[in-house]
Length: 326
Image (cartoon, rainbow, N blue to C red; front, side, top):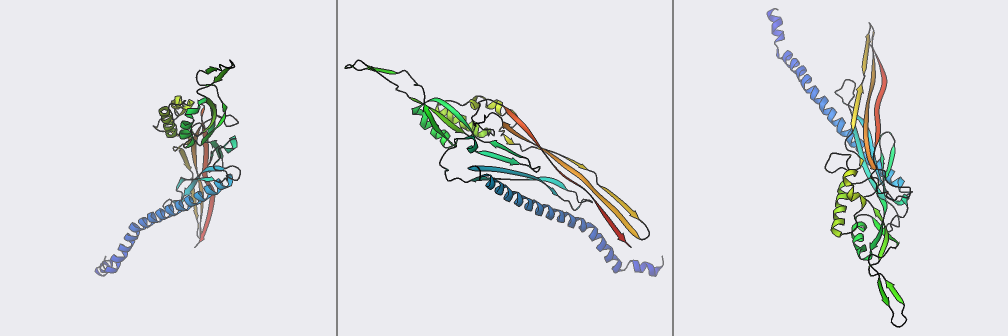
């Protein structure tokens, strides 16, 4: 290389041009990463807002046929990744819940199975599962002196209760003889009542902390312990966590398969390419509930814990053709 040509290569112009290319290579990847973060954040916020509005509208629609509703909506959404050659990113779960109470008789308690509080769970596959979060439970021969305790426990935390009728006498009868007529008068010094409870710890969906707190209060009050206090360990044996809860479980399994291909053909005048996007993400979730209610909504007082598997899938199978003339 001659001195003049070497001098041209060492001029500041060429040095600046090489520096610009190097900066583009370094900072270009950072710009793409920032673009991916913006796209990810924007789509997540948009999807979350959509799910929140849809969950509320669905809960509002259900209350047209019953006094109250709690609706949980879960959707699996695809978030593209700009740094991926095919734009394939990840599938995330976006969820929201809404509760609506719409009844002009809110002070009254439920007396039919259709009026019991329920929770509806919908996943991306469109499957809706409905479960009662409370059940009717009958207590017989409750001392009238203990009715205030039932009001304190079940009235404030367990939705409510009402009387079904008189029960048997809770102690020995008092017999008095009228000295004038000689007739006997029998009275009960400790009358009882048969009552029906609306117990939010005896439904198909049960909460461990609620059951634990309820049983502690019942023990302190000295009233009859319900069946779930003695069988709490069997009810929540489905999970190894310290405070398991029924309903939709937080853990889920997701399997992804990707089979994307790129075919490129080039001749003297054109360049043709076929991009085939073929990927699928399958998510498996579990709903745990206690199937121990009869048709009238009365608790059978047995442990019949079941798991319902709900599977959803998000996929894309499409081919894009590109042709460029030069």
